[in-house]
Length: 116
Image (cartoon, rainbow, N blue to C red; front, top):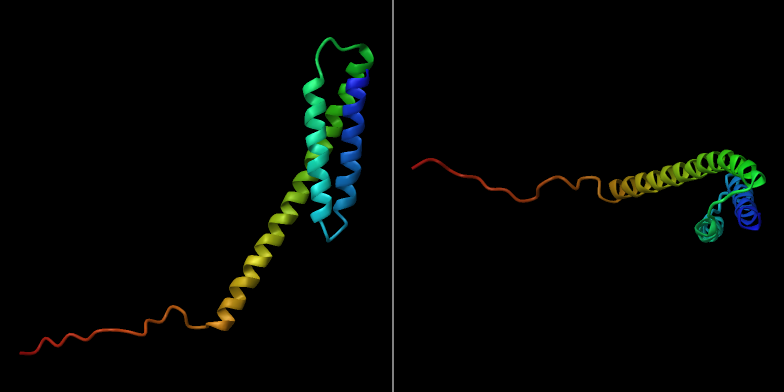
């Protein structure tokens, strides 16, 4: 049961980290830690192979619920990051409009005289 138990513990640590990260404004270090834990879990996942004992099957059922919760929390973090990126883009656009309020006006033109 060591192989599945290690994956379960890594998933549990990841859930705790993701839940603690949702309340923090500085996410960069947390995201680095999340990526490291996801990589570790990926390695552990490759080591899982059948046959499973009854205890491992039960632990697998718990893992399915944990994975669902983890995916929802990771999606929330992704959405927050997306909103932050949109906010930064909007601020950048507003700053550009303030610096140059008339960018679309053409400053050159031509006049054609049709008279002979």
